[in-house]
Image (cartoon, rainbow, N blue to C red; front, side, top):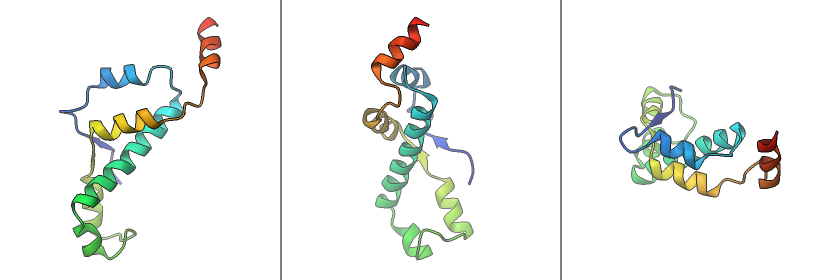
Length: 100
């Protein structure tokens, strides 16, 4: 699988970094993974041809690889994921870390 693709016209990295302030690296990784799953579900819901053509998700054909590589994470995918994340470091622990 290729690199993760983002809709760069829609996504403002500075805005996302502000929304992720105080989150751990594991939290951010979880957000990106969840956003990718949301993007996959969004795209496959809009276009069933992937499932109709391959018969199942674990097909290694060029068509299925092209389809998966064409999926872009949109701003709404990321925002929904950010809003649903359970932080791994709670508020009191973050406060202690800032004092150090």
